[in-house]
Image (cartoon, rainbow, N blue to C red; front, side, top):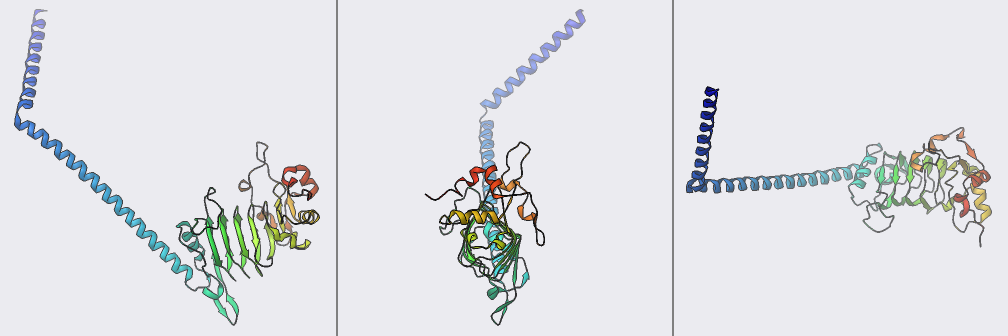
Length: 329
């Protein structure tokens, strides 16, 4: 026991000596002007390093911003060159328009007609321009306006005699000329349209939840979804042409307000009214959640859906028809 006690005491004494030396060294460093100067210099150097790093990061960010701006300008220039270069067929002009819309480039009054950039001879379009995959999309919160430079506006665009394949126009305001154009598999959804479609042909396309006003005569229509559309011109169509139109039964289209009640009923009675789909929770799904109605159209067989009579649709969805078919005061 005595031996171990002595060894413990010696270790404790050694520890006290070590601590005393460390404390003395710390006091020496704190009191020594040389070490004090080195501490100040070290702090200054550290600050300079941090400042230089921050400046370099800012320069790098600014350089990348400039690079992105240059790449954007180059992409817009290439898109304009591709769009306006005379070339028939599908040469990526639809994607060029999509890029210009996404980047907010001005696109008003652009002449994209066959006469301008297609093959035109002896007063006729010999080979049209194809615009495939064209997209004009805007945020649902963007206001629908005709004010210049609005992000969701294109005015005076000329697509005369063009072939427009698979276009997607959503929450967009579009005015333009589509005379003698062929429009296939297009989606005009929640948009405001003022179009000249005289002599045009529209197949398997949708004008759903949109305001559609025409400057000329109505186009030829084959398998067109007019669910919830405001389309004054549909009251001018005869029964045979109306049968190529369809709408979800809970989203009937509206003609002009001055259209008399009997005519409005005749129009809705001729249009194919498809029974809407239901979700698992028992509520009617939103338009965008439903299978595309135009997919249920066959060129030879017509519309293939669970159709409803006007009387059945009014009974099932009275709110959808209450104002639409209200008697004039």
